[in-house]
Length: 340
Image (spheres, one colour):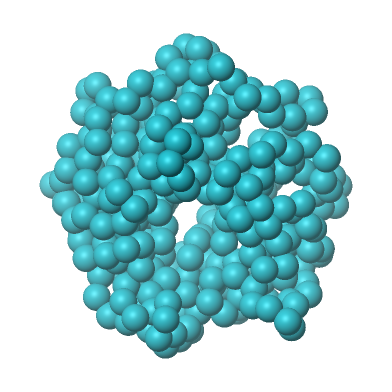
C-alpha cells in the first residue's frame, strides 16, 4: 500500500462561513493527543465524510449540502490539493472506496440514491451510475422518502443502508453499473443507519430510529436479520436515543456503538451473532456522530459538542475510558485516521 509519509488525522466537519470543512491534526501515537498541523486544512463545504484511496495518495470528501464529492491529492507533508469536484445527484452523507481502488460509491441521504464513480489514473472521479431508491417508512418525519445513509464495500459487493425504507440493499458492479442483487427488510420504523462487518462474517446493523442493534448472518450474499438488542445498557427515559456509528474491534471480541442523546459509546461483547451490552461510556462531548479506532485509542467526533475526544480501550475488558485529551472542532462529522 502506498503511503503519504505523514501522521495527519483529518477531521471533516459541517461548515459556517470561513470555517474549513477539513482540518489536519498531528497525532501522538503514545498519548493520543492531537495538535493542529500547519498543513492539511481544506475549504470543503459540509464535509460530512472522508475516505482514503487504498493505494494512491488521494482523499475523497462528501460535501453534503453542496451535493458534491471532492477529490484531493495528499502531499508528503499532508497538504491537500483539490483535484476535482463531481455532483453526486443528491445530498451525500457517506462514501467509500472499494478494496481494488477502482470504484467510489456515495450514499445520498437527500434524494435517497446511490452514485457510482470510477477512479481515473490521476485519482479523479468519472461518473458511472446513479440508482434511486423508492418507498417510504413508518416515521412520517424521517421516513417520508428513501434516505440512503451508508454505502459500504464488503469485498466487491456494495451494501447500502436506507434509513427511509428500512432496508439494507446489496449491489454488484456489472459493466460499470450498479446491479441490485438483493435487499434485507428490517422492522418497520427501525431506520438502518450504519453497519459493521465482523471478522467471522456476521453483520451488525444500527437502527437510528428505534435505538436497536440487529445481528445479521450472511450466506451466499444474502443478509438475514436476526435478533435485535437495545442500543445501550441504559436508555434514558427523558429523551430519545439515536445510534449513529457502529464498528467491530479488530479482534472481533467487541462491538462499539455511538449513541446520540445519552452521548455515550456502548460496548458489546460478541459471541457469534449474540451481543451482550457491557458498559455505556460517556464520550466527553455532545452528539457523537462518528468515531475511529486505531490500536487502543478511539477518537470521537462530537458534532454539536464541537469537539473530538480521545478514549483508551482496556485490552482485557474492551471498555474505553476517557484520556482527557480533546480538541475543539466546530461541528465535526468524521474522523479519518492515518492510512496504515
